Image (cartoon, rainbow, N blue to C red; front, side):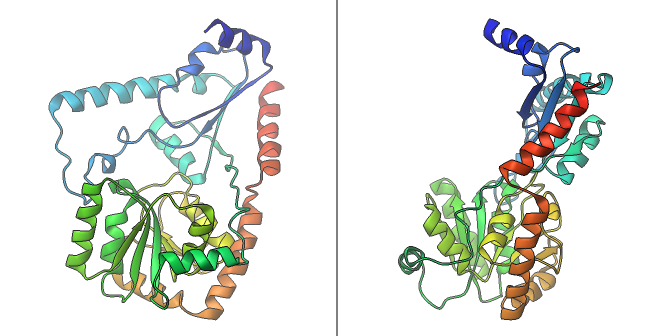
Length: 318
């Protein structure tokens, strides 16, 4: 602890990241020391209900003691952010416009936006022979499919993907998955909806690129993803991203320009989008615009450092 205090005293300014939990580290920083917080996301289950649900959407009952502890924990987290309201030398940048809106909703703090660094060097538009071999091992040729990425938590919305794919004559490939029990429940749900599914885990970058590149589209149904890397990876590789119109997805996808943003539960709109993503001219146009969008967002380390320096300069001169 003494070493941390000496480092804080030595530094001209303190930049650090936080995923929405209690700001323990900030308690070691005096008000006189400029501090920049990169706010990544809200703490799961503290400001939302969806993280308390089972993966299939059932559940939610919790004992009164758990609710009381959660209430206490939420108040403690909110209290730890209050120093930012009183100090002009302390600022917060969120990792997306959506995260910035959550920062205001949960803490009544207005923050800027500092997009994260996204390494897309392995997600290029040119397929390799290794990819083709990987695809041959992982998928049966000629069967169209959609791909979604995530674990089996309700937050990721993987079960909801089944409901939107049902009746569209498309397989669903899940990169991620969960426990054997969760995967079994997922397959049972898929069977009841007539959807052929495949769960793939521990893929290397070549295998993941192969699955992405050959999909009809990459889809996502997360309940408030703070930023969301998956649409960016899909755009980099040239596969249409079709995502719910909520969360950080709205920062990266421009509806109808480089992909689609669709309402959760509008099954007909999703069905039409799956057909739209089949059209070669549309795919090529979205792929071009996707590369342009990535460049506009400036997700490189150089742009990130440039923006971070600008923010820190603004508080070291106060």
